[in-house]
Length: 246
Image (tube, rainbow, N blue to C red):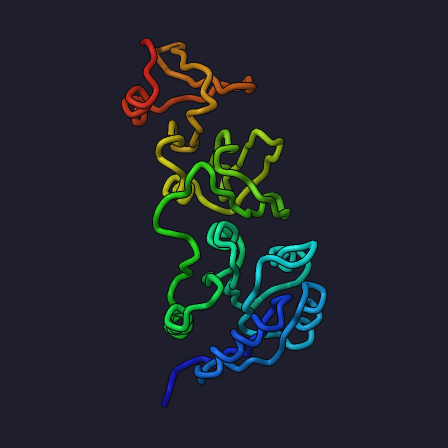
């Protein structure tokens, strides 16, 4: 007897041929039961309310809106798989309840891998193993609102109890549910460095490094008054990356 979970599936895409293509490819999987389709976010919200799907195949680009709007407007409990022609969006959407992303046209072999991972209950693979680049944009939830943020606009990230506080040059500031170690793993190493057990900074916004009382070093960030302490643990690597006088 198969232990596969049966996924009641909703397809959300504004293009009819794209919905048909996904439906036809999914037909070969016994564990997938397509129960509905939606051509826009408004229809998808209604379908989610009426059908309560277990799995949603979701496009990113819609006329005048994006698939990410669905997360703000609907109570999504289903697993979500992005299907899009725009990889710069989906692959960086690591704050929403997404378990994979597929590029159009969908490769049948890649789709089979996705379905296999669903049935094996493996961890989401939307977050790439390599780090982000400075030019990447992430779609992230801060203080219960969603934003597109370019990596190179992040000035610093500070641990705040069970959250991290993000400060950017664009005036966007808020708390993220991502832990500091998760940020440290995915931020580009050429720009970001941990300076304290609770703080990561963008070296491009460092104005100067000073030495205060008891030989304690501190960082002055551009356009910020508060000085950031440097732990002795990180001082050597900071000197190597950002030369300064003792």
